[in-house]
Image 1 (cartoon, rainbow, N blue to C red):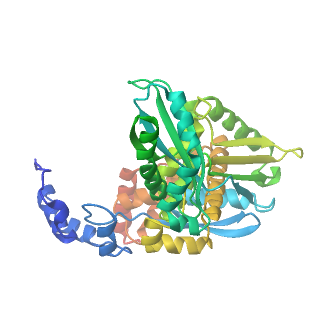
Image 2 (cartoon, rainbow, N blue to C red):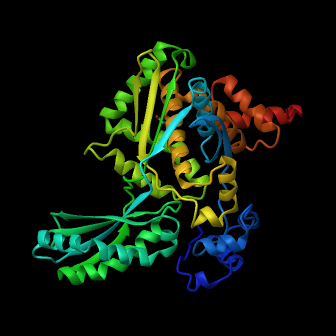
Image 3 (spheres, rainbow, N blue to C red):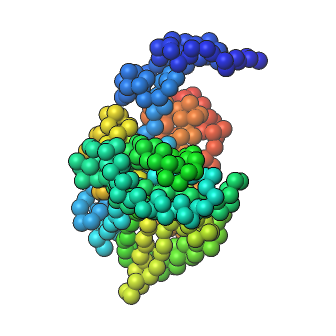
Length: 428
Ligand code: MEV
């Protein structure tokens, strides 16, 4: 067996191709791996190297475009980066079924982010809390000086909140929240810098010690909302509606189900977040923390019936996404994704993403409440299985079709089909 030594001194100082050679040597990779990794696709090697530490290549993920979406009265094409076969189709289907009732209506609570400053070692935390609050205007000055560009774009410091939290190992902690309007930026860098600039003064005013100075991903002052109505005719009748409502009840009561339900929501949300070069983990952390805000982890969506008996759905979740900074600017595909969406503000991006999350949830619940998820999944998954079995070009569709017709979507069966086809000289 090949043994590896992961201690490679000076690895980060090597060029990308030198790093790749080193990895090939240590991991015992063959030349085909080198060809695979040195092809960085549509991202220039120099960009890749400047984006992360120790880069050796790229990991390409398919980019699809979901159709049929109407958001706030406008048609919008949705770029989605995902490796999961059914995700794009789910959005297209949900959007088609609510087009006649007007599509999705969205809103955003604001573009406010929170930065936290942790203060410990204060014997009189309630007193310290007031000392900090009294300095609201001084804190505004420091924050706004830290990011004059944000100020110029209409953003900047908005408010202050100070909480006393019990339960620290050395007594209560005093947590200051800087509330900052980050406009078209996701805002992590802006608010982190502000927290770092303000922290020494908080320590000085209170006599305590400041530790963490970092944003909160529970961006509950940046809530994106979307709602839509699906007519009974469009969804296939009352029993489908009842199935979806009952699926929602299940998720809202049971965290085991809610985790899967919200995973489906995030299939849609994270795909657009990724396609636009935004931070998927930030949005995911915010979503799940928000889903648990009542003390129990629940559904991010809600489903009801309107006075005419139609199905109505809504979603509300933190959506910390931006158009400036990080990969949103440096990744050329992310910039094109925004053009595909015809999106020039972070607000529109956030609102459209919420609509995509709701659409995804509709399709998942409808499939689960009717035919089950495997039928649709398998039809799409069959292509992956065909590729895994070695099918190439037109063989992929033929093998996938036969797999679905046979009702068993398995690699061993795909291999048999492929062998049979090749023996007969059939490829399509
Ligand atoms: C699969 O990626 C997502 C679903 O499990 C979501 C759900 O169960 O609601 C289908």
